[in-house]
Length: 398
Image (cartoon, rainbow, N blue to C red):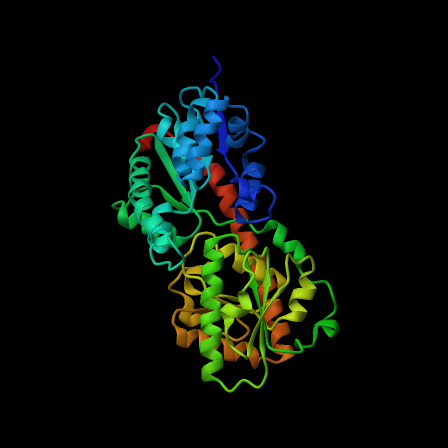
């Protein structure tokens, strides 16, 4: 008598605004498809939505319009294919992971990517228009859905992107079991390593310049830009800077009065649009500036800046090694990223990058690429480990 192996399913959805962009979510799904695609049946929720009846599409559009993506995917659950009993099912997606609430007789694993409740808590701290009110109203829904999902008896494993997300979920959901960190893949970023000779890069930008990477059609990037402007104005008011500081904004621009918002004679904002040359960004900027503390996916911005080879000033929440490792990292020579927690930290970091010599900047560039190579090796091991974790699940955890 032959023993039939359980059916294997990978269910995911890429948010609409990410379908045409190269970002952490798409790289994460590419790695999952590579790891599971040969043995798992892959189900794309977006394709189910496209093939749904008109009334279903109208209902899902309504949930999307009011910002309740998690309820949108719950509504789409009835379009899932039949999943045989005891199938191994992995659902990946910030919102689509909550499809797991509708699956009962399967061995379930979910890739939450990020904690929505943590995002809501951080969003409450925003001063961007009505965002705090939105997150205050959204938090009870996010908290309840997470609690219901993490308490399901058939749930075997939960994956999140960072230790901060894991620790948060464990704390607010009473040491929720089976939580694992699965970092975003950086496969495609390794291809951006600069190939030019060191002699062609052994020069500094003609003026003090910083790179800000982020499209301004997203409120979190707008908030980060406002933080960058505030910190730069504070720096210029405190330090004796002999020349104008240029802030180069890479990404889509939806704010026409950026220089009026800067409102400082020694600070100029230049919109660069999307960049196609890592060498050009490296040669035009002393460093990258990412003073964001709201979390959720911003390690991807950090990795993008490191792939260019730029020293990167970032908030401690972006630290891929964990938010508590930043003090010892700041003291290391040629550290690829300078993590900051207070305004004073940012002032020191800005002074450090503007005073950096060309040779030291080249050494930092080499450190950036070495860090990415090491991180790539680590994440590849993580992705192969979760295949074993999920495929070896048994009923002993029930």
